[in-house]
Image (cartoon, rainbow, N blue to C red; front, side):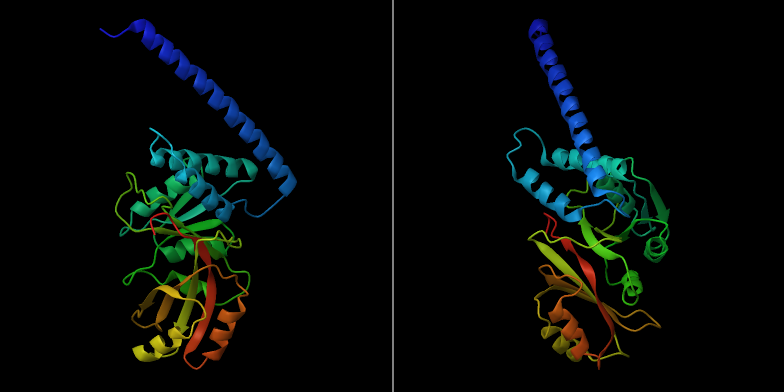
Length: 279
């Protein structure tokens, strides 16, 4: 038979810790309110670089019997809830039939209380951000047979930027099938020390593969991944991932684009994202 007296003592300790945790969370919420007051009115309150660095530190610690997945989950819920406290957020999600898991991963990333709206394509979800109806869009990570949604970000002013890739901790949990997610919004990416810069390029006509390869080898930053999609009836378009952080005004990349106008129709730095712990 269990020692009921000992069990009650342990349960009392748990209850005490729960109350301490609640008091600390209330204190954290009060500080977030002060931060919001100092920031003032902003179009979006997400700090992707700070979030990534915070999670790297937390998940690098010895958490004892606490699963690291629980740590990530708790903090993602807190970040989502406190972002809403600061000023609100609406997420447009490309919840396609091919990748139903993207909705689940987006919910895990932004938290259970963040307003989310499903769209049948990445193009439609991104259009909500372009029109100002949503602050951010969660889109499927590019693949050979997928949408070339980033073509919409190659030309224009004040365009949204790529700033995150998830799941950051490499855990899909109970998410349905699908790949990683890319987050796009109207904010400037933040350097974290471990970053990937994304360059989008639309090529003229249908250049030979060796011409594309030769052009890419002249890039000022090392390539970590490259995907070229040749959709029927459209010009070939490349998603190029570069090692390191490059701001939108990176002179080396701007010079590279200008020097290759004979083969490049349109090109742009699409943003950057903190390297997930899975990569």
